[in-house]
Length: 222
Image 1 (cartoon, rainbow, N blue to C red):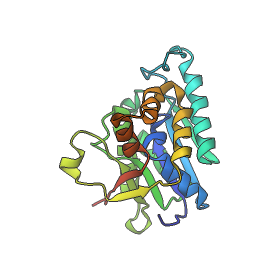
Image 2 (cartoon, rainbow, N blue to C red; image 1 turned 90 degrees about the horizontal axis):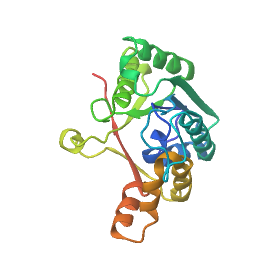
Image 3 (spheres, rainbow, N blue to C red; image 1 turned 180 degrees about the vertical axis):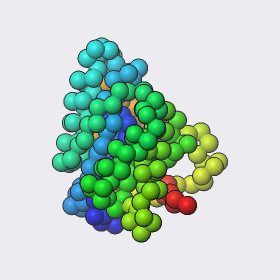
């Protein structure tokens, strides 16, 4: 990893940062790189209410807000932007609105690198709407001013269509911190944390998947 001027991370839900990106974010913070996390919704329409359930549909909003704030603290972030959009509705925002929000963030922060989802390969409609807004905002920038794009892709067709990830971040030394970050999202991550702790082949597979490397795809805008 090279030291960046500013990293902007954009995801739609609390916990999107925890699984595949928090080790990378933590390394940037420890390098002294300013990192901003813009989280578009509070994820309060998510089906998971804890394991065993401890949240209700009414309380999940405030619980997930506290969870992402604790995650940000553990990562070491000093700039968490909670944009407050309604969960599971980003695809229905007025055309161009989210692109404008992303443009404003980019104009303000002037990031040298943006981490978000890969459009077409991130499964959830909120993920796709977020990714598309970021890409469209960057497209409108002068070519020599565009930040590098570092994208998360995980649809079933990812490897068939995109091939192997070309950005691989070794998170050795950050496993314990990443596990605490994931645990901060207690309403969502119980089964995964149980798998990580299991002394079984399933547990080893989970540790290999989540706790050794974080993988991304670069994205060149034509």
